[in-house]
Length: 230
Image 1 (cartoon, rainbow, N blue to C red):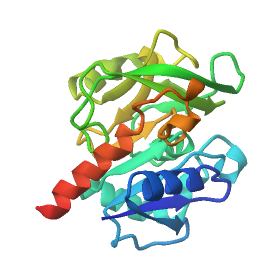
Image 2 (cartoon, rainbow, N blue to C red):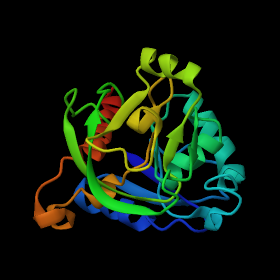
Image 3 (spheres, rainbow, N blue to C red):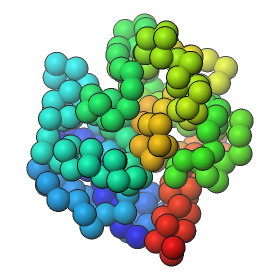
């Protein structure tokens, strides 16, 4: 069970994800530099948060042209579980692996705080340990996290069960339908704006209260264990 963490120039959450996977979840995780073109040895991929290429032009657009992205697209078509967190979400959108766009927050300010989101899809490799409508306490940290998509595409997202998480009680960035995470039609590629790696240990949570955000990674472990076993 080997998970690759794709690192771009400007990634800054790769070590956090590596720590959570290896030390907290017991998942063998390894870094992959963005110039790699072969990723056949990995059972899952995570694109972490950060500011790839300093968010030049717009967040994720340059990283989406990296050599590894073509290999990621191929693996996505083969059904490999792929998770993009924050900047990783932006990269997946810019690469055309997820629909819509991620633009500047409606208040045009960087937003960094804890909030809640609600589970809408429990049938992905990253959500199989949740129950429908579960609430998750989780932090956000982004300036270009507002998910937008044309109105005529929203019914399709809902029909295909592609809205995985939505913000609850507040819309921190003005996202369409309060969307916090989406997946592709097949469900193996998911983009998530909040940071589960920053909520997977009680010591990181406000007042050290336990968050269930770590179930995103535990769900992946469960999926991979079942997949590899079969």
